Every structure is written in C-alpha cells, then in structure tokens.
Length: 355
Image 1 (cartoon, helix red, strand yellow):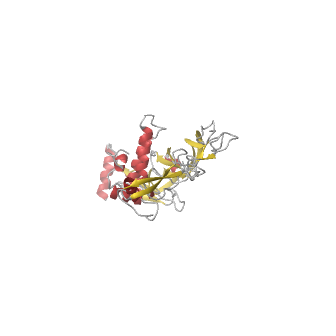
Image 2: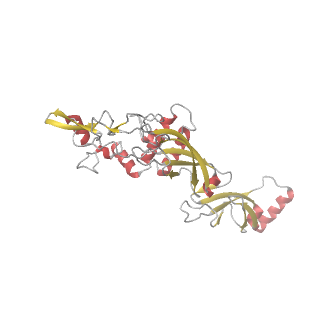
Image 3: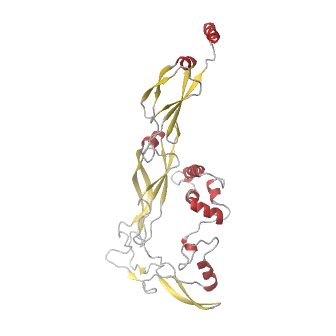
C-alpha cells in the first residue's frame, strides 16, 4: 500500500467508523473495483488494497494494533528464538541483527507445506434470495495443481533431485565478520530458492511450476437470512497450496438489492400501507402482501392513530443461525382526501360537531 494512504483512506471511512460502516464501505468499494465488474487496469490492484484494508479494520485486535503502531504486528516481526508472542511497534530484533551483524539465529524454512491464497468474490442477491436462501453458481479463476504432472512439477518418467548446493535443506550457512567478531548467517539457497530440490526436466504442462490457471464454476449455497455486507466462506475452493499445503478459501461478499415495498431491519420486515380516515376511524379488515407472494388478512382496530404500527409475529426473516424468526411491522399511513364535494364536507362537519 502507498505510504501516502492508510487503511481508512482505502475504505473512505473515518478513524472512528463503526463495524457496520466499515462493512458497508467495503461492500461499496468491492462492487466498484472487482475485476469481474471493472475492466480498468487499476481494478485488480485497488480491489486487493480494499480487501486488505477490510481484513485489518474489521478485526478488533488487528485494528487496535494498526491504530497504535500504524501497522499490524506479525510473527515475522519478532526473533525466531526466545521472543515468541512479543510485539514490537517499529521493528523486530531479527531486523536489528540483520542490519548490524549480517544475520543471527536460524531462519524458518521456506520449503514446507503452505496454504494457498484466499480468493474474494462479490455476489449480488435479490431481496427474496437473501431472506429465503438460494443456490448460486459463481465462476472463479484460480490456480490448481497441474493436470499433467498433478503438482509433481517434473516431466512424467523423471524425478526431482536434491539440491547439491544446500544438500536438500533449502538453506546455506555463510560466515560474515561484524563489529563484534564473526557471525554465521543462514540464508535461503539461491539455486533451489529454498525448496531443497531441483527439477531438471520440468513438466511441459506447467513449465515446472506445478500449478496452472483454471476457470471453475462453483455452486454456493446461500443460507436463509443473510444480509447486505455479509461474507460467506467456502472452504478449499481458492488457490492451490504449495509443497502439499491445503488450498485457500473462497470468500463470497454479499450485496442485497432493495425491495419495492419491504424494508429490512435485522430480522424484522417493515411495511407501510395506506388507509383512509374511515378505515382508521371505524376499523376494517384489509389484505396485505407478505414477502414471497402470500397474502395476509390484517385487522385494523377502530380509532387507530396515523403512524401506528401493527406487529405480525414471526412474519419476518429467519436469522442466519436459524434460531428465531423476526416479525412484520405494518405502519399505517392515513390518507386525507384533497378534494371534498359539498355533501362530504357537510358529513365531516356534522361528525366534528358530534365529537
């Protein structure tokens, strides 16, 4: 990320933004910059920056570290031995020793199993699909194990040999003189790049990389009750892992379109219906729509006041965990006639004299 910008700038939110404001800002930016929707040259980079900012600011612990230090502390910010779990705001002891003495201690090996990168996908739902749940098919481009060598990287019938330079360790030791004497530095092998192995006859399908790009259609089950800005995780459907590591996860960021007459508030649904002054005064039974196409017979009590709300139990949205269903809140909007004939005026005048 550019040093002239910060995570709050990336999402266009203030430093005291709430979690809900951050979610909504991320959803807006993700929709705008997702490479599948935005074909500009900067879209992929902007989407990556927006997602990075969201992952930090939506996590309370990471956000606190970022607010305090201007960065998020990771394991690599501390020494490999003796200081696990300690946070350093500007640099780790390992960086200090590297700068002054040419390295100290033993580096973590880079040729072990590594999980594949996660992928993010923006998916737009209708109001009904979010409330009732649905099944969607999404198309992603991801790295998979090579279909020719199955990730072995070597041409069929050949084998991978151990690196002679590092003897298969992926690291080499070299001595270096420093201010306080001679120190031993352990560095990544420049021949095998830390893998400890050499592919002498690379697979022609992947040129020895072990992976290839594939376009895949993945079926995603959307549970009932999801809401705008929520994120679903589909395990193991992202980039292939390295050195036998598991694949990454696919994260589906949900956007929900507005409904023509219903408004959602958590698990409750809000509906506003018009009634005339006669219905409000005398009471009435009216048919109102329910989400999904059904109709409900609503009883309006006599003498109800404009703006009053009637609650229909369990006619709302099922919570994502399925533990409860919200209500339907019907607000009455009393309509006043703009024009009255003489007879109507007389009737209203007589009514007013009786009240």
